[in-house]
Image (spheres, rainbow over the protein chains, first blue to last red):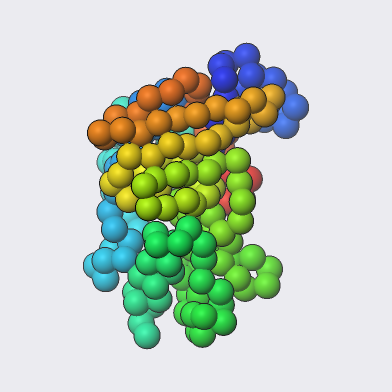
Length: 72
Length: 134
């Protein structure tokens, strides 16, 4: 996940790397996702990776919807 | 040590120094492999830690500064993740993925400030097929 100055720079990167345009998030949306995803302390013995269902639920709670965010 | 204790050791070192412990320091290659198989960490071809998300063991264009830490994120999401994990104000020194222009993102008092857009190139279900490119 890279940071770009604007959409024109994203499109140029996609063309160079032969990648379709993916999902574009504002910094605020990325920050909300980062807090939800990376907030839990991974040093905690009880920490574990989220299940597919939990991850889908997390994406949905942040309004990350549609085929791009689908996990199965 | 249990795998959970080794995971804690890895993250403890990243959170205190910004760098990964070596496999020699860990002293349990099988446990590292199990953690990698479980997609908790990513190992390089030599069996050393390459990523323990959100931390990168190698320099990247996503350098995060907090009051007590200087560490590299694997991507902009992970750079923000280091700020989230440390629950501290942070400055992220990054660059545009296209033109390389220097970009700064600030996290202060639980809010983010800066310019730019985050592009997720790979659909979520395919992230782990090539996690380094992702």
